[in-house]
Amino acid sequence: MKSVFVAVLVLPVMLTAGDVTVLSSFYSPDQYTNGLAWDGSNLWLLGGFYDGFYEINTSGTVLSQFKPSEPGGKNALGAAFDGTNLWGMFLLNTGTPGEVYEYTTSGVFLSTFICPATYNLGLTWDGTNLWMSCRGNQTIYELSTAGSVLSSFSVPYGSIGDMAYDGSNLYFATGGDGSIVEVTTTGTIVDTYDLSGISSSFNAVALVFDGNNFWVSNQTTDIIYEVTLTPVSLERYTFGRIKTLFAD
Image (cartoon, rainbow, N blue to C red; front, side):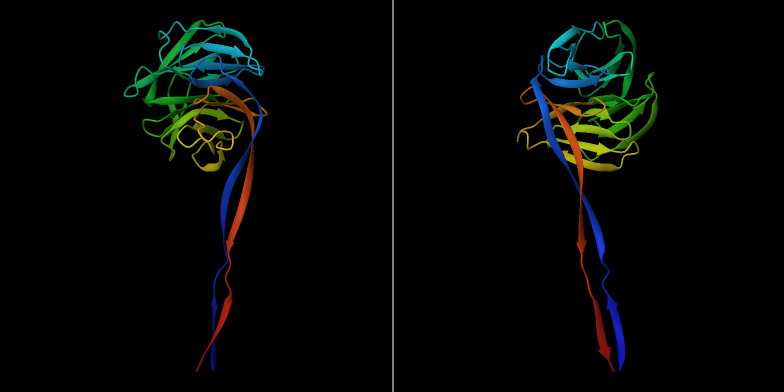
């Protein structure tokens, strides 16, 4: 009699889901809170209704503001701060590439470049270069300050919004499903953070990291939230067994 061993392997399937904790919140000074930047002390909001920059403290008090002279203040979207100056993205229509403008914090226009694709929504700074999200082709671009494309990758989200950088990974808001997605700078999705626990109709658009916590806007209510994002790894196994079969 021969014995035949059949082994069923045990293979782990890694699933991840992140927790979101609200620390504070306040109403935006402008409708359509599309872009957020952090200057080391305060937030800078780029609003899409009045198309202006607002410097606001972490309690929501407006400290200063200016309306950009270029390109005429139309359809303001993503924002970033490079340690010295502000960058704002403007989109005349979704079918043509938008433009990025550099300003001093007092509103003096410094430079501009045209976006590499259409329907541009998000902007952030990694310490050296800019990163931009484009809904038109569901792509994230790494750009020089002159607008040259340094790298890019696609993401499987049609409603990608504003972006943030935490020193290691990128994050982007998704208005369609009310979440924040963490992704490496080469395009690997690390985690997803569901905002529906804050509001079932959370339309996440503006996003920034302040060195400790994230700030995200709900465009449905024009409320800006300070939140912590905690990754939670869940591991699921498909268990098997070793069977011994006997044959003559």
